[in-house]
Length: 120
Image 1 (spheres, rainbow, N blue to C red):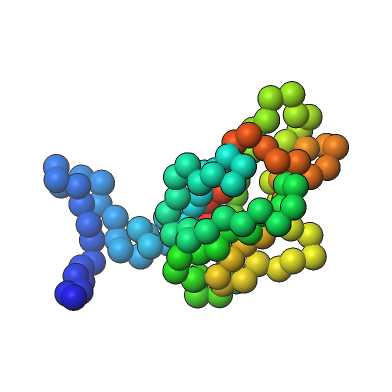
Image 2 (spheres, rainbow, N blue to C red):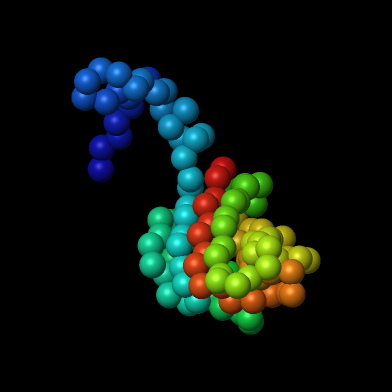
C-alpha cells in the first residue's frame, strides 16, 4: 500500500483549493440514513441495532480516535409533533458506537426516515 502526501488538493480546473487538514477536519467521519432497521445508505457504519422503540445503536466500521465527537441528525414522520433525535440519555458515546433516541413530543418512537452524520 502506498501513502500519498501533499499539502493542497485542487479540482481539475485548478480551483477549489483545500489543505488536507481542512478536508480531514471538515468531513463527516461516519453517516447513516435508515428507515426502521433498514440501512438505506451509509459511510463507516458496520451495523445498526434496534434496542427498543426509537432506541438505536450505530456501530462504526472504523472507530473514532475517542468519544469526543459531535453528531447531527434529522428524522421525519408524517403527523409527528416536533420530531427529534438525541443522544440516548444516560448512555455516553464510545469511540466505536453511538446510541441515539428518536421520537417526538409524545416520547420515543420509530421514525419513517432518519439521517445521522458524525463529525470528529
